[in-house]
Amino acid sequence: STPLVMVDVRPKDLRVVRSRVERPILRRKLLTLLDEYNELYDTSASRVGLPRKLANRVAVLSDSCVAKVFSSDTSSLSAFRRASGVLISTSLSIQFQDRRNILCDTDFWSLWDIIVMRSGWVLIDVQQFNSAFNGGGCRYLGLVRFLPSLLCGQRCCTSSGLCRVPLCTMSISRLCSFDGAYSACGDIWTMLMKQSSKIGISGRGRVGYSSAEKFERSQVLSFEYQLKLLRSMIDCRLPICDVILFCMEINAMIVGFSSPLSPDFDAENQSHCGDLLARELMVYIHFTNYADDVIQLVAFIDADFI
Image 1 (cartoon, rainbow, N blue to C red):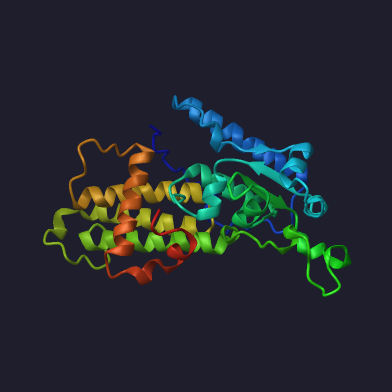
Image 2 (spheres, helix red, strand yellow):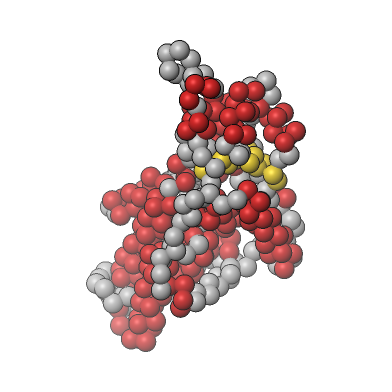
């Protein structure tokens, strides 16, 4: 099982808000980032003695393989090439499509950060792309420097002005919204803040707990600092991988303070902490009166499969 990685935040990372790359980086630099993703994944798996989950790696298809994917749709293939398209094969594509089970998946967020924050490239709607070119399955991520529809012109349109090329009718993946992703993290912070206040470990409220004084002032101040640090990480748009790992850590402490954890729960195990955070969010979303606190989270991911 994967050990929980303690988040190490450098002060300089919290001095400025990390900007999303707006102009697409060069193709070779994008490929380098994808290679680094694979290397980092392999190194992490090797370090903790895990088998390499090759399906979660990414494979960039060659030109000949890309042509096979588009099959007889040569017009879409031409439009893809005009947009400098890069076609990736990975099992993570299903999560980009259905938005399920992504919250605590650090592989997903590492790839998301490359695509959305660091590359400036556009991810074509995954369901639309795979429905058209993968027989309804979900295997590919189509990245382009710009949407093919921007170069339609007379090349792709009929006399009525309507585009006749399937690729040019496709939109951007909804998961490309970095504002949506960080707003979702903000909703998690809100939940953690309210849960900590409820049990008395943070200074705000201290209601609903008969033994609020069980926590020493130093414990309260330390925990409030952790919550403020998490808020700063979100506001400064640090990689969501790190944000979610920190959320797991804080949530495990809150739950541990409020009720006994399962005897086999390992607070240093990423899978255990991820499952616990998902469970707490499910309860918060579906079985409390706080649904309005997590509107952005529910809009960004599938709230039934956190």
